[in-house]
Amino acid sequence: MLVTILIYIYPLKAIFNSMWDVLSAGRLGQNFGPFTEGQARAVFSSYAIGYSAIAIEIMLLNLRGWQLREALRLNERERFVTLGALTGWSVPALVGALSLVLALTLPLRQLGWSGWVYFSVFILIPLHAAVRRRRWRRKQAAA
Image (tube, rainbow, N blue to C red; front, side, top):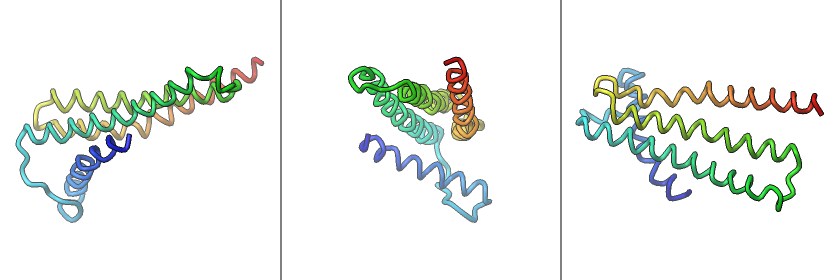
């Protein structure tokens, strides 16, 4: 996981510097100059792969905890939390996969959408958490 994070940092820095440069009209961030189409796709694609890889690695750790739930003697709440973490980390993994698809398929003028799609996690993760809380309350009320 550390190796994935280390590889992931450079494209993250490049994308955020470019984003701040665009949003601040050149006052913040760094303009990386004109990217060729291939370079721009490579930066967005490597970011998407790194982002998804980290989320998948955390999903796999939670999957292992779920598989060992009997041996770990997880109670009902711990099982619910573990399963929620497993499904919750699928959100960033899927957003990263969507970004990768967009980075590889969008025309150059619309390539920025493969970066902006990450802001959807600010809606999707709280939505997932709200659904999980509602399910827990229903489960508790039924018991």
